[in-house]
Image (tube, rainbow, N blue to C red; front, top):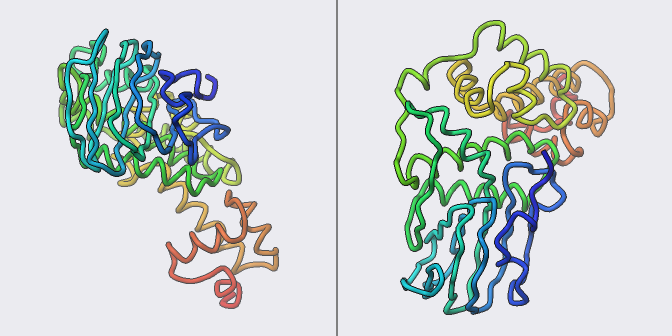
Length: 295
């Protein structure tokens, strides 16, 4: 798969009235594209895109009108309001005022991967919505924006997890036919063999960015199924478990030797010494230098 970018969007982000603040361009994200920007008022029509669009309004309220082949509905959208538009669907839209937004474009493949949790396995179809609210989806979009704002290569697993959770929430709450998985499906954990293979991969590549797809492949599972089964086995999502392993290895290296702290950071998958310090303080309540002094 290739990185998602502007070519996977509807064209809203290429309008002259859009002032980008930050995007996921260059981060290697294959399942979604994110852009945070300031938008000037406009009215335009857009062709359908191969990705599903989620827009989070960061301020407002602002009047939005939307439709297909003409504007047919209008709504005052408040801060925290969401604009949802499914893939391969034309869009006519009018933005009535200045607005700060976060756009998330999710690949259809990522959304359809959630269909494996459905009993009938039929494709997921999203509804067209605007002005709706969904606290969990809002927090997921903000978390993705935070990953871009404070990007570290070691955060790729976390970004994959957020993309997966976003797809699951869209399928669960915003599909034409909402899907509910059987409780037992969410309780099945990785087998001993699968967990051993995943843990060995984590240990072998602890200093490298590691994607959910890589981990799922080691277990012989799809990404969505792997994430559920890993959490059922360990009690936490893969990215959090991986960070814990990196912290544990860094602490051992700091206590046992004289390797420079910057080298310890690189050996344990942290982007730089300051990144290591921040994570060590968050997890252990101390600093790398203090761990070294403890021996």
